[in-house]
Length: 156
Image (cartoon, one colour):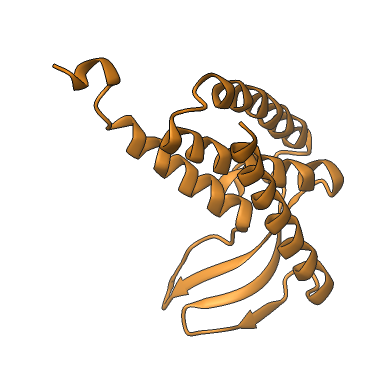
């Protein structure tokens, strides 16, 4: 169990540290050109993924905080119950770390700090952060794990 929570803690630490660095170096809306397809930016996301419900009037902060808290409890239970399932638990640990990182921002700042901005010509991906990346990778691992053959069918 400790290793899964340790992975989550590393994600939280990386997320909060990188957001701190961005907040120290950038004002809201600043862009730093890095490559032809990547910029560092400072955006504030008051909604969920891709700024979903960002302009909903403020209630969304409490809603998404509640959803995050429920997810943290459920994921912690699943990590305990399936602690020997390595791929499944790694995915859960990444999602847990990302959820905690973004929840911290939401509770302390009222928004989530996003700073990684990828684009190509007229196409752009919404800015995101380390927590968002961990959540996406974690969900990908959970999907990959779902395709594994169930244990009771392996001997058949």
